[in-house]
Amino acid sequence: MSTNSAPPPGTGDIFPEEAVSWLALETTARRIFSLYGYGEIRTPVFEYTEVFQRGLGNDTEVVQKEMYTFEDRGGRSLTLRPEGTAGVMRALSGTDAMNGVENRVYYIGPMFRGERPAAGRRRQFHQIGVENVGRVAPALDAESIAMLCHFLNEIGASGFQLLLNTRGVPEDRKPAEEALREYFAPRIGSLCEDCRNRLERNIWRILDCKQPECQAHIAGAPDAASLFAAPSREYFDKVCSILTDQNIDFTVEPRLVRGLDYYVHTVFELTHPGLGGQNAIAGGGRYELNLPGLNRPVCGVGFAAGMERLLMVLDAMNIPKETVPGPTLYLVSLGAKALVRNRKLADALRRRGIAVALEAEEKSMKSQMRSADRLKAKNVFIVGDAELESGSAVLQSMSDGSRQTIPIDSLEKVIST
Ligand code: HAM
Image (cartoon, rainbow, N blue to C red):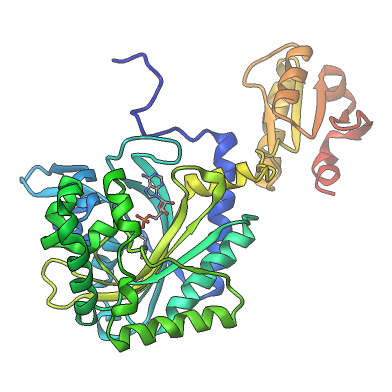
């Protein structure tokens, strides 16, 4: 067995002092999303591999290079979910979301991508995601973006930028694809190997390439969205005008295509300058997602925010961190009898919802006071043989040192007022 306490690269442990900040994010997300009628969905962390191959698109970087895939005992290929949308759609595909009934769900949990670890880039990371499934309307795309901004405001994040673009729908993309092909074909020799294949297979993926040799060419590519057929352009105009009405600032970024192939119409990303290289805190858009065994796609709009990155943003903004609250009371026991009495007292108080700490074994007064201090207890209650005899003991506030002698039996009343 390894004695190294470090977890595998790209993963991390979350200790109680940090877990409180995670919990605060989750609590805010649940509160805000429920204002918009969303309910929580929990799906497995692994799915049949085809769910992601079909769902995200075989040509995407995630499917080609980043999935953690393994075989179950029966030889069926399974994959740890690299994102939440495909699994959630798999779950909803058996419901009325397939018949145009709107479903609003959110999820919180770990995702897995075999990426090169870096600051803000993990192999196991956590997303808070939202999907509005079953209906197509520009107002729903805009509402999803507005809810994301609302959530970010509520956690105290500011200074982020909203980048927006449209992918149109496949039947409206033809003229844009032709223009892109015309532009990239003469440059094929100076594109990376992946992009050379993408020219014929999936030209849009070139726009998402991060290789330096491709970047310069991508910067000069035609603004594809402006070449979409009218219905797709009109849909996007409507989304933009609703966002403007709602006073939501955005920048149209014509190169934004997003890394997954299921997107149609609106795509968006929220970036923050405090994050450096991995600057996307959230991303999303409208999608038509194909699944194995379904003869038509599931449609929806949604987003996912990276929890590690949200916490990094709050850190960069020096927003005070949540702290683990200390117990209301630390029971100091001087002697075996006092310990027995205090155990009973602790049990009764905890059952009334009061947080109590005490030692498991007999310890010196000094050592118990040190523990009370380390745990950030708000008060100590000191019980020894004399106190058991008299029925009263000293309650001391750890913040101002003030002391009062109270009957042991009335401790609960005093402490809860
Ligand atoms: P995504 O852009 O791939 O979209 O991921 C969303 C967010 O997850 C990113 O903006 C980032 O904050 C975080 N993230 C992604 N990869 C990593 C990583 N390796 N380490 C740390 N954080 C990461 C999706 O996953 C889509 N399912 C979003 C969506 C929902 N679209 C429609 N509905």
